[in-house]
Image (cartoon, rainbow, N blue to C red; front, side, top):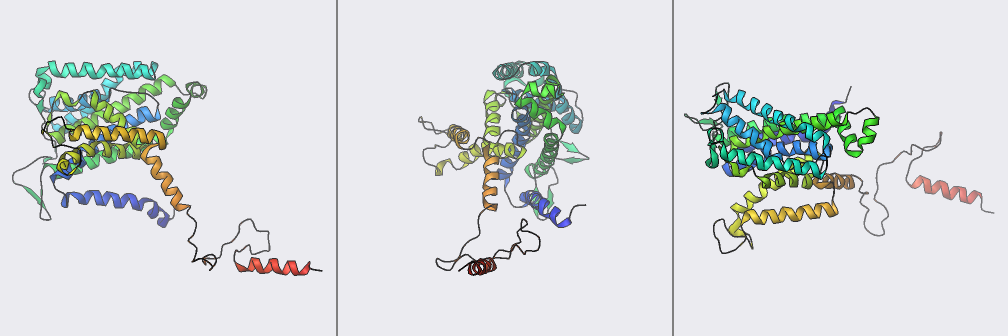
Length: 398
């Protein structure tokens, strides 16, 4: 049975982080909440791509396609024209629809790997973008479609009349969606960590390291690679649903090749095969262009959106910055931000005790017991060891 104190020390930072995230809507305005919502949606999709590329070792450039399936699947299933299903049911079916799309492509993912799989998934992006533009009755064409608000038990995750107020703070769409995003991200976090720490994660890591060795150990290589693609597609579908609810309107141009490249940048910057790393990379890549857009007039060499004159806009500047971040990460921290943070914490824990001023000798500290000391000796460190040595030297002095 674990010690409650040690359990609290392990779980304490996680609980404090959860409490802090739950309290943020009471103090932040809509702009910062929107950044958080977009970051949470991106983190859900990045975790799925991290499982596929970081853990299973499969290159995918088609992640934007599965986000589009989730987003447009929810809009069509819950809206008009469409079946008009309850929004909660439509959200679940949209995630399953994205998983089914991944399942249809999984035979290719199970037999093709490396750059060839990347090129094959790249075709999904162009095919999906063409369908989104031409299937007007489902997608709304170039102008897209508005997103029906999500409802759970009569509670609407959108603006309502009368206005909901908690502790004197009006709760609009951003505040309500914040807690929905937190719940979905928590589900993603714990399920992904469970997969990585369990047998599927070990099998996928073995497939990534050596397919021959994994097959010798009894791992069905094609089956696990296909399953990883399906699971990653379902995470992308869930991210697409949350993105659609956050944007409140979906358009085909958002789900382009640039979005797939952004997701690859997220997992590379954050750290391949790490849930925390994928989350950190998603926050960095998502928040950077939004922050640069808001503070463009205060940044050097960056022009406000729409100013023209051949200057660098905030979106282009942010892409240059996280492109440079990818180069720096690959050169100096190949395991990404997560690995860098882990090594930094390890160095801080191994830091030697601080000594006193020069000439005063080592700083006093508690007596330590040497576990390797022979039986019958104290094995303590301190001045007693020096006295014992002096005594033995006097005994041997002629």
